[in-house]
Length: 226
Ligand SMILES: [Zn+2]
Image (tube, rainbow, N blue to C red; front, top):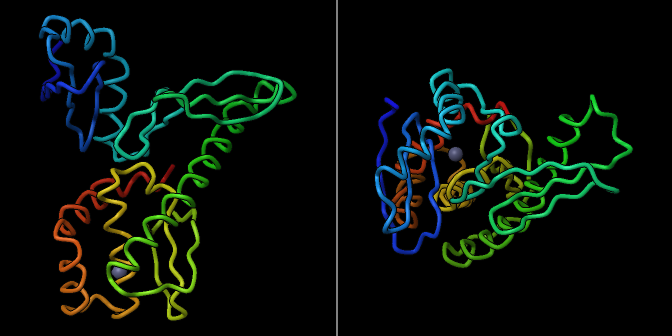
């Protein structure tokens, strides 16, 4: 096992989690787990780690379906796909349970699963951005006329001259503090429909971590290819 990793112990954790961000592996472990245990786990997870590191290197969107793991805000969800009487997606603890109708043809299962997962993320995004928008509108004393959840390959969000905002559903795959930045960014455009110094001043006033969040999105731009 030659892969280098950062080890983070936490008293709150009950199980070990592996995370790959920007080509860097982080192991989050509960207290009391030895490095030998972690080494054993890393050996068992080697194929998953290799695949993920390759994706990061190639800047290609990871195939979450093949990896059986997918990011959801700050969590890594384990993907569980099964054939059932009807199609349905359900979150049980940190498992995303995807049921596909048995009427679905075997060769279409992958496509169908991806569609179901995407729809689920879009539903989560609708709810989450609705709540965050309500919060930030009050905080920034700015009001949008409406918002939409979009499926764009080239942008995380937008604001137009009719005060309508849009957010990419893929933002549900990034940590909340990064998605929150997009809300603040787009709301700030209601006052300045440009990227002027005044615009950035307003963003930074409400969101001091704006630079880090923008950097995170830039690094993970290739996720748009999902
Ligand atoms: Zn902008």
